[in-house]
Length: 116
Image (cartoon, rainbow, N blue to C red; front, side, top):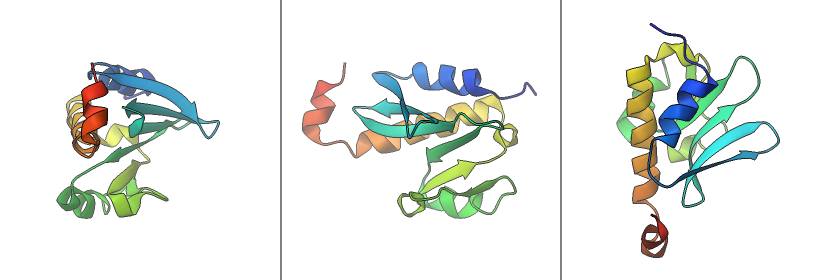
């Protein structure tokens, strides 16, 4: 299984429509849909990645070794993957796309109309 790195995650995020990226808090690469984050990569080594998951997945994944409820946003069902190689590239594609769709589904109708 190929090693997962920042560029792997970045490529998956940037393949999704209307994605922007920026640096927040000085050290986090954030991927957004209409100014709402759906994936965050800590730029410190080793990298860590936050994504939003479903309620069921949150309960299941939060107890895996290498995954914890994300600080500050766990109540919104975000996980922090501390060991990015716990998931394969296909699994990352699934969870990132799902996070994107979960965040996009909560956008106000006006913001949805602004998307390209």
